[in-house]
Image: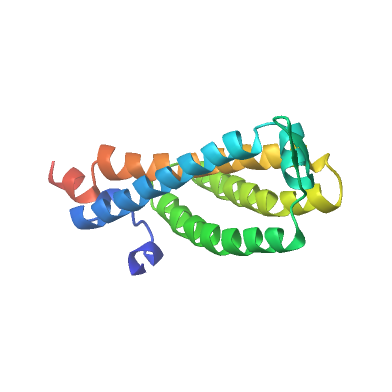
Length: 171
């Protein structure tokens, strides 16, 4: 972690073992993102109407569903805030250690955080304020997807498709 505090540290300069560890983490993060997508699309539904019915209760696929309880929302929020907070922290640091333009880094860090915060708050707003917040939930998911996709893309590109400083200096 000390390397991240060094000005100018780039993942392309990391030792092979370090790049393998980070790549493994990013592959696992991709698996997590894929299962999240399947859950969002298949279990909840990709549209605002399906999201509102999932959270507030109603009819889904010809079956009656119950609203999410306060306890269910607390458990969801507790788990996701801790786990996704850690994943966000690691992935944001990885993207900071790339040669991506500074504006891009800032944008994806803010976008991913806004998506996560909106995802956490969205279920509460849909459940207890208005089903109209399901539109914000969809936007939060899109922000999450764009931000986290960049969190994977830029570090992988940096580690495996860009020459490190040492290699450039010897050429």
